[in-house]
Image 1 (cartoon, one colour):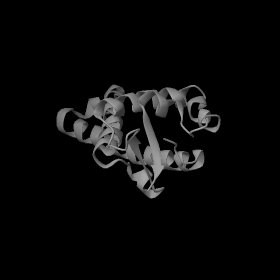
Image 2 (cartoon, helix red, strand yellow; image 1 turned 60 degrees about the horizontal axis):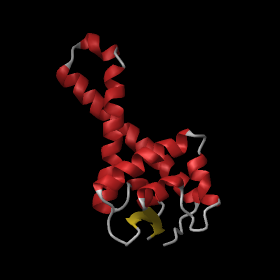
Image 3 (tube, rainbow, N blue to C red; image 1 turned 90 degrees about the horizontal axis):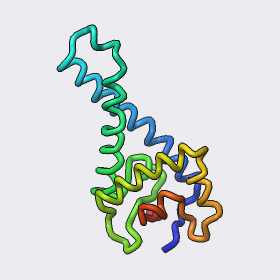
Length: 135
């Protein structure tokens, strides 16, 4: 199956979702600090880093698995599915999230691969066996 979502549309949704995910991270970290720590602990950034990855992962994975799209993907009008058209699984969401981080971390080459792939897939699409399609 071929993806019909452009690289520009993907990057637009990612930008939108990054702002939302980090707002969620700040909220969760703030609540944890208020409930469980005293004023001295509020200057320690360790908790923030411990909260960031799991919170961000939960935002993306639950959005993908349950509703096929994050809020950014809804705004840009596309969704993620399996190659057979079904919702992706939690395992695929974990693989997609992890490989997506690496796709970006290697100078965005995993995303730029979409421009070379005949089906319009990024590296993390291929690795997780998922496809982005317009609504």
